[in-house]
Length: 351
Ligand SMILES: [Zn+2]
Image 1 (cartoon, rainbow, N blue to C red):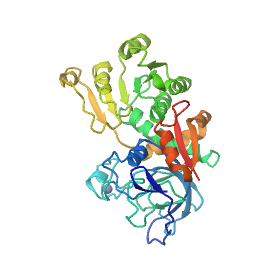
Image 2: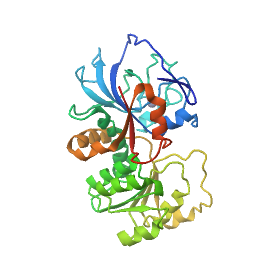
Image 3: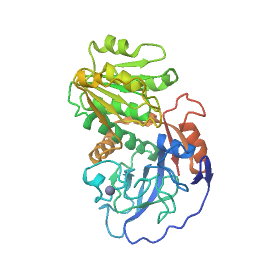
Image 4: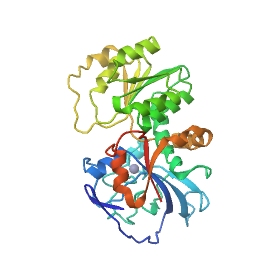
């Protein structure tokens, strides 16, 4: 399914050419996130049409003539969204986004005009670039559920690795989307002593799920004051606050306000052109805060996520909507909440 412009999918047949290096993935399932919604709406700089969207892919290795990936053909793998050139400054510094190709060296981002054309998950086949990183995942899971490894890997990176979360730490998660729910799971598993999750009035189902998966308190900020709800539940300020809300930039002010002095605020969602009004930086100085931007997941977090999927049977309920490839546009509408928000968590396209 080729996205030829904003809100314009064309069902297209592309050749799967012989390639000198790398291999091919037979796609099973691809989850949809804000990245795909933004590409479909045309509201991101990081998109060049035409492209095949989809960067949260699960499939089976269909060919690997040079043995690049070290796994037998037929192995089911989760493919990291980012591709590494391993030579640019960003790769050498271990950052998540390589820009050796434009607009980003990543699945679901590269236009289909870039050879060999098949760079996204809304397709039957995807090119495995030699710089792709793949992680084996259990055959015992439905492919749609296995795509949740992507959200789990991000969450492990943002909630545990980036803030160096230690057992006994306390974590407030702002935003109960798939990554917020996954952050709850990751923080709990790392030994967090308290996890709070905050969302909006229309997030009721998601907040209920967060509570079932280990949140000590869930807060509907349309109904209750965030800071006093955290204080009532925890009795002090959290060590770490993670922002995974979409678009809302003002929430960052609340994160800076609520986190404990000397604590860490992890900013893991983009706000586009939404500026923060009335940010007085003294709060960062006086509270001696650490503020970390986080974008994408580490490979060690992917390994953790794939292992965790096999041992946590509760994750089946993460996938709430599943669409065939032909209905890619409806899948994106569903993911954006435009087909209703009831029971909406992860939306997946399955072959
Ligand atoms: Zn690079």
